[in-house]
Amino acid sequence: MRRGAALGLLLLLLLAAPASADLTLTARAPRAGQIVLRVHATPGAPATVTDRLTGATRTFTPSRDDTVLRRFAVWSCSGSLRRFAATQAGASAAARVRTPTCRRRLAVVAPPSLRSPRRGVLVLRDNWRLGGFGGRLCVKAPGLARGRCRAARVGPERRVARFGFDARRPGGYRVSLINRFQTIRGVVRARPPGGRLRLLATGDSMIQIVDSFLAERLPHVDVRSDARISTGISKPSLLDWQAHSREQARGLRPDVTVVFLGANDGFPMAGAECCGMAWIAQYARRAREMMRTYARGGRGRVYWLLLPAPRSGFFRQVYPAVDTALRRAAAGLEDDVRPIELDRVFTPGNRYRASMRIGGHRVRVRQRDGIHLTAAGASLAANLVIRALRRERMLP
Image 1 (cartoon, rainbow, N blue to C red):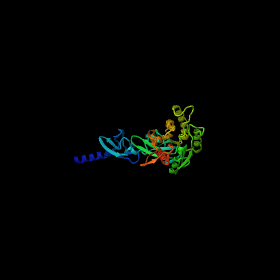
Image 2 (image 1 turned 120 degrees about the horizontal axis):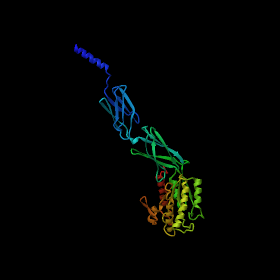
Image 3 (image 1 turned 60 degrees about the vertical axis):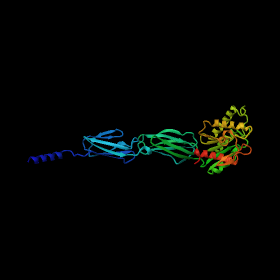
Image 4 (image 1 turned 180 degrees about the horizontal axis):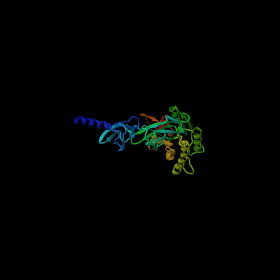
């Protein structure tokens, strides 16, 4: 009788006590940036969940067997293997989930192309949809010595941020975004205003033949030639090149200007005889003004061919002085002007040579006057210009 009473009392106590559940914890990453925890615990008793990576904790009292925590943890660049722990009344449970690393967290969305001169827009997108993350965003325009860089960040709880850049001249704009986890690189191409790149080949008789090769080898470029024989920067009585350059820039609006000028120079300027420092300074001032004119406020790119040393005569003094002045004129204008150093290619060390090796063959590169380039020499000069155009992304 006593045994039956005891069993009845025990059954009564079990029925009166709250239902008990084993403590379990599961973790999932169902959507970008999100970690969802499911806690199976005894209702009515406090439970604590801990994020092992961040140290964050949360204590709550479940009202049912299963509790879903959707905002307790998010993806982190500090670790991709996430570990979590839950405790309740001396019981414990653990869970883990692997999330992506930050190697592909950000994306830079750029227009496939745009028409210059125009302001372009880059979209920085956080693929995790969390925000509060970014890097160093750089845009390097075609021909620029250095890129323009800035800190770029997607704001907290934002998905995208927009950043503008100036596409003043046509060509390929190199875009990069760098942070400690990833590097993104790409190129945005800006099309010329008229649809075809406009190239002006100008100067004295030295530009002749070179301009023909440029037109022949750049069939998709609108090449305009303007050769003024026997003219020079130091002899404005025959042609004022400063005024003429303004007319060319205003009338043709060239995206690229190739200049080969100076073979007829050496005349006194502003009371200074050639080829001392005062003459070089005056020549550099005039040439620099022309360079700025052709650059058109950053919308154009200028390639100025330097003079190879002549064979003999008075020009042996003039040409080095002209090249020195041109290098001085271009100093500080690297974003817009690039000297093509034909002097070092054709006459290294200022030593004249009538022939040189090109493609494994020795060919004559100077005409009999000891000044002008032969067709082979002009071909090489044109190729050097084209290489510079491609290297600086002025051409596709």
